[in-house]
Image 1 (cartoon, helix red, strand yellow):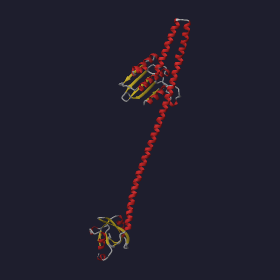
Image 2: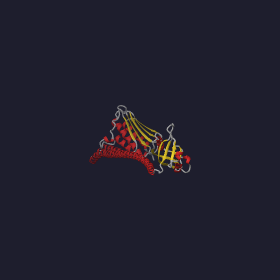
Image 3: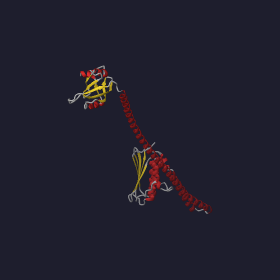
Image 4: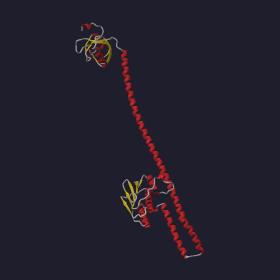
Length: 368
C-alpha cells in the first residue's frame, strides 16, 4: 500500500462487489471530500469493467461510475488484476485525472434519447388506440346510416303501397256507386217517366223497393268510407255490432270476446282494428267456403293490444309481400300489414291447408 501512496494519480483497489478496499489520497481528493469511507462503484458498466479487469494483468481502459451523495459520477480509468493467487482477486484501478466530459454528454444524450423514444412509443400506442376507436365509430356510423337508409326505403315503399291501395279503394267505391247506385237511379228515372204516362200502384211499389236498395247501397259505401259507429259507440260496441251484423247477413255463428282492462286507444289504432276485422270477415266469405264458426278476440295488456280472428275453414291463400303485389290490387291483408307497420305493430297469419285460419295483430298501447 505504501507503493500506491507514492503514486500521484488517483488509485483504487476495488472488490468484486464494487466496494473500495483502498483509495490513496489523490483518489480521496478527486472522488469525495465529505466521507472518504463511503466510496462505492455502482452500475452495470462498472460491474462489467471490473469483471474484465480481473482477468488480466495488462491495464484495460474503461469507465467506472462512483456513487456519491450528490449523485453518480463517471470517470475514465485503467484497471487490472491486483493479486494472482486469490479466488476473488482485487482490481487495481487508476483513475485518469481528467473527467470524461464527452462520455457524460453522450450518456446524458442517451438518457434523453431513451426518454424521447419511450414517449414516442407511448404516443404511438395512444395514436393506434385512437385510430381503432375512430374505425369503430366510423363502422357504427356506416351501420347506422345503412339502417336509416333501409328504414327510409321501407317507409317510402309502405307509404307508396298505402297510396296505391287508397287510390284503388277510391276506384272501387266509384265503380260501386256507378254500377249499383248509378244504374239503379237511371233505371228508376226511366220507370218514373213511364209512370208519369201510365200510373200504376204495382210500379210504385217496385220503385219504392228500388229506392230502399239504393239507400242500403249508399249506407254501405258510407260505412266503408268512415266507420261512424266508432265515433258514436266506441270500439267495443262498434266491433260487437259489426260481428253481429256480419253473422246475421252470412248465417255463420261468430263469437266476440274481450279480455283485459279496456283503455282508450288512439283514433288511428281503433280504426285499424275495426278495418282489420272488416277485412278478415270479408275474406272468410270470399275465400273460406264451408266455415262453421268464427271467433274474434280483443285482448288488452299493459304494453299492447292484441286482436285474434280465427275460423275453422279450409284456410286462406295468404297474400304475397307488399313489394310483390301489383299496384291497384286492392287493400287486403297485405295492406293491413303495412298499416300496422306504420303504427309500430305487426300482423301474423297462420293458415295451414284444411286447418282453418288465424289472423293475429298486435299494436303498441298508445292510448291517450
